[in-house]
Length: 443
Ligand code: HEC
Image: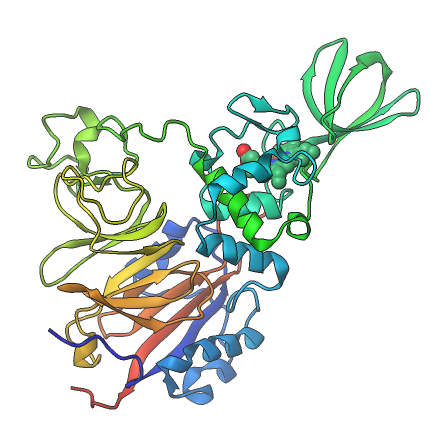
């Protein structure tokens, strides 16, 4: 089989096909419009000066990070390049380091420094001001946990909006209303103190868009401490060892016919009822995307970690071990381990390079996969998955890749995490990468 590409003997040509894309739709719809029906770029014109043929006709792979940063000045700095400032730094650290959950637990309980436990309960211990966090690790992925600590007002939990109450005797109380009746209002303030206000004494009451949760955690904690705290929150899950069984779609790959019926040879027909008969493989955590290897029909599944990001080869009836195995290789005979894995953060799109159409031999048929947090695209040889090479790095939030029939590689970047009421449209960028020159010739 071929040697992994060294990354230095290929020059590539990069163009920005569209930017500030209005990705206000769900990601699935974006993918649908961009990739399934061919490329339809929103009409935002790409200035001629940006067209790579004029601006940067030949870019070496090893220099792509500089290239991408140099785009940042022309595009929006939020779209390409790393998140700026101290928060971005803390975010990046927490997303790329495991952290120490034990130390995080002590920080959480520290009523002088972090004060978390003054306001939050975990397994029955702690205050009542904010939501119970006993299962927060099951509710949020790491990026979302990070966001909830660094930008607490971005998404406020329903029922925990901050209320400001002015009373007839001139008092102003700010806090969370936890109980109310016709006679009284029970409010907890930021110090965890409970106030019982007779309804008759309320002169004015309004809600504030600012979370009661303290801001500026990045000023209080070191990066390492912050990551430890995130690691601890990540461990708080309902029933960590509950098997994701046949009666749920969580962690499954489904297989259905084009007309919606279940194929007669699906692997779990005997153990499942109704719609669950569609289950084809299980024990995945967050199988974000998969691609079909054209030469063999094999499924390559990108499964977001856990402790490790995984690349799994799909087999009917296979169990990949989540949540019993925290990702990574396993010697447990019940489970099938990944063919490739690396420490978190978020594996995203994947695609096979076409066997023909302009790529040098060493790249043909390789599996290309992106990481949303690290901002790179790597490739591996599907027959020798240990041979992994970085293709490009420095991308801001790559979410998907697709090779076009003519060989161009399209990369969709989208600098947004969840779609909520603070969602900012226009953070999408579509890049096109194609081989421009290879020192070994275009064979
Ligand atoms: C003064 C009280 C207070 C303190 C101190 C506090 N929080 Fe909060 N926290 C809240 C409130 C109120 C909310 C709900 C409003 C919101 O979503 O911002 C909240 C929300 C959260 C959420 C989101 C929960 C969800 O279900 O979406 C997390 C996670 C969290 N806090 C973690 C922490 C951690 C970790 C600390 C310590 C560093 C901490 N909080 C300190 C009051 C507090």
